[in-house]
Image (cartoon, rainbow, N blue to C red):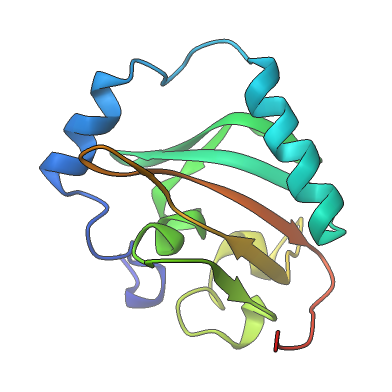
Length: 143
C-alpha cells in the first residue's frame, strides 16, 4: 500500500474494532438521528457532502450520508480514518496539499474533494466513527 494512502494509526486496533462491533451498527438501515447529524454538519460547514463514517476493517461504511453516492469505500480512500487518530476536530483546508491525503483517489479523481472537516465520535472503549463534511472547494485555515 502506498505510504500516503496508509490508514492512520489505531484503525486496526482490536479494542477499537471490538467496541465498534458491540454496537451492532455496521450494515444496518438508515436512521433519522444519524441523518440529522449529516444534515447539521453540511449546514454548519456549508458543504455539499456530509457523512457519518464507520471505519471497520478494510473499509469505511457510511451509516448516514448526504451528497455522496457510495455506501462504503475501501479503507485506503478514507479521510475519516485520519480523524479517528485525532483527539478533536481534524480540518484539512486543501486535501491536495496534505501528505496524508494528496494521493487519495477521491482527491485526485471524481469527486475531487478538497476540503475536509471531521471529528472522532468517542464511544466507551474507543473512537467508533467520524462525522465529517467535505467539499470540492478548498478553504482557508481556521483561526
